[in-house]
Image (tube, rainbow, N blue to C red; front, side, top):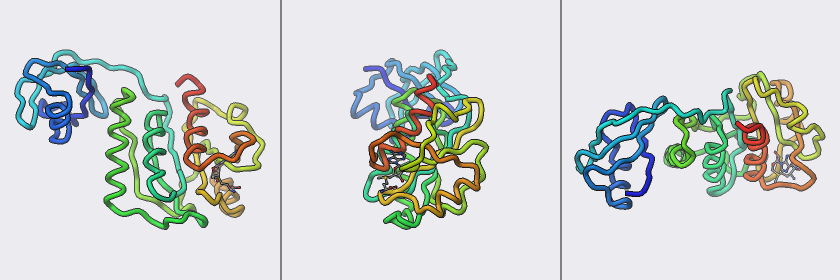
Length: 228
Ligand code: SAM
């Protein structure tokens, strides 16, 4: 079987059905095949002992790789049209976000999110955590109105026309909260409200980025660009 990481909460020795099916139907697993299992706290080398489904496995060797940024990283992307948040959640998970909570803003076209879509975004976060070798799956939470964003110890809001650079203002030791606007941008009062909550407006360069590109760029500057 080719190398694989499977999400198995609690490392109980039994794979969830979705993971089991992937192992059996896509990877054609056989008894004795080895793969990696992980949950929010642990990662281990495992061996298939029974195909099921569900696939049963035994743990061979536990590992503790460091894949986290080292501080909490909350991303507040505005609600976006269509399936664009899926791209944001996937990339944000790869880039180390620990919490993703969409915002209902004045210019967001969608004004809410159904249960099904939220669950799908959560499943995307699990997949992206697996793919990027993370043990911790970021929380993906239901949207809140922008006015309910909690105070940030260190907040950055991407805003067209701002002049501060992320690298000039970033304190890598402090938890980070990042806000990005919708397709139509933030209203000026919304940026002011975020500023009152501790968010500093920052630029992402001279070009106007799509909202989903902006979320990825802002996170990349706060995490990957710092080598973490
Ligand atoms: N006309 C809108 C405006 O002026 O805000 C454009 C919105 S842009 C498509 C969507 C979001 O991406 C913005 O609200 C902002 O958060 C972020 N963004 C895009 N380009 C940016 C840039 N060059 N600097 C900072 N933020 C940017």
